[in-house]
Image (cartoon, rainbow, N blue to C red; front, side):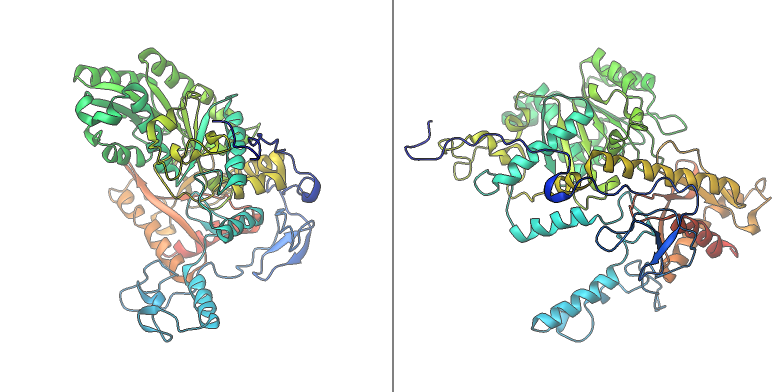
Length: 539
């Protein structure tokens, strides 16, 4: 329908540049190179950590390697050793203690902004450490001040990104950011949406793949469908199994494909599982490959997996929530070779790029509007067809959500501020930090790699002096499996740092260290190994 008389014309698609210019002041100063040796120290921060020349409060330390190895400020408040032990929330605080004390029953602060501000500071102190450079516990860490500005602005504007009329800039911005991400995947066109986390991105892909194969199921439900089968590596994220349950496919119809010793899907095993599903009367429709598994950081061989999918006519989804940011690096993007052959990709910039939770993109190669046709309901009170602008900009009907927060602004601001090369340096630096630690682990007594990493997941055991030389004893592995939990408890009580551990298959508990924070220095990496050694020497 044409615009009414006197109405503004249809909104043109703006050209939003991608390299920093103008008010952003050009490219951000380069982040430091790999931690290969001590650099000059010119300042000391409030935490006791030092940084090299080129840093400052405005731009933050530029993170050159530093010789300082002081323990600095605690990551978590020191535990108060109450009966029952620490809970892990705030370094040993009781569950429920966050609201205890004066100022209102049930932890509700007393009236007035001063009381609220005081309570806010107290809870921040108790909550702890995700922005601290010695937080190595999850696949996300660190704080980028450009992205933080975007997060603050998003909260202040408090809009929902479902229609152009109430979020015009953000609708256009999301389109541009998604196009840039698709370009890095290797697609010249396509579709996509920001989702509330990588798990939902994987589930959206599963749902769209089912709709593409059996569109009648949207209206008639599961009674119109045969028994469906989907396939994923045994190392895949648990959201694949959850998605099968949530979407009514059933966890019995998830066929897990055997992986090799490094955690990579074996394409020949995928072929066998597909044939097995067919022999059981199921209809294969979806394969999820992983780029960057959660524990070992493995990358499935996408070219070979894509060949199998092509032979059987299956939708190929790549869960690159963790490893997708390696596409920004000319040195490391080979890990995702073949990703351009996928039908959909999940990618979480909030992990390796420190964009901040949450920033999760689902990218589709499809240009036929599958997302809209699969999820759209056409609510007439939101998505009127006779608006004066191009209603293709009302993108909210592509999602299962109604209200949808703005997740693109923080990534857009970060990208504009540092440029593609700045993001590439950030990725390369994370790899360099891991490589430095690998060499240190090999050099130090008592540290043993689980495997040589190809990504930035550093997996290792610490063998305390009491167990060294006892590898042949019957109880060696049982006793070694108790070391990581004991060290983790001690570090949580002291509040010195945080790192994850887990068993894996037949392997007993080992540490998995991730260094993605832009604020990590060589001093922090040295401290990490020193602290593991200190906390575990008497076990």
